[in-house]
Length: 291
Image (cartoon, rainbow, N blue to C red):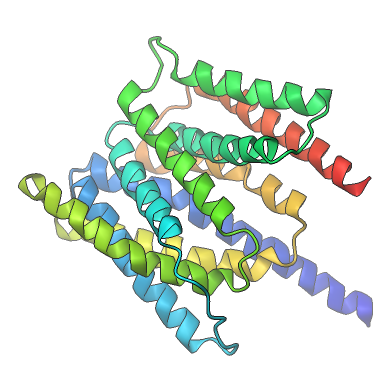
């Protein structure tokens, strides 16, 4: 009977993990689609995304069976969340979905790996090779050339990735990550609205643009985090980090299918270097922990 229970549980874990990764990749597709069609400005997209995400997460936390664990107000985490959403939105004015997701993911992981080095973690030769490979891949992706992404967009997305990496680091050890995320979304809303006021002269939004922003906030961000936190406790740290390697690839293929974007040789080579390098670091860190 124990084997019978284990099978469905494993299938459920795989299914929920796949749903979460698709949701995270879809954030890039929704933002790029909204801005590509000029249906909304980036500041308004970010504000609506945060507002709808805050409402969704607050409702989920209120309606769930378990009580919320009170936590201290972390305004720095909220500021990092806002910075991620804001720079992410403006970056997709010029980046393709796949390229943006790869730069974002690479910057997030390199930020967290760099923090680990700064806190005294030791890398072996293979891990250092992987770290260097990921950095070289990221530099190659944004270096000047015919197929290089726009520099401003790449820089904005890299900043978004650093902000998200710092936000993730702030959340380590939080007793109730879903409730903390809901609170941080709520605290980030005033910052996003202030940004929108700063760009009021360029504000515009049609029904499609607003709908895409709401979908990004309520569905692929809000409910995406609900699903991710539901499955996160079933995954080891190694597996949780590794499955996220799929997000840039899902975004790239989604861009091809839904946005008519091309996967360039530069993007393909950079993807192999960045994702392969990070996977190598993660595998080496995992083995060192088990020792």
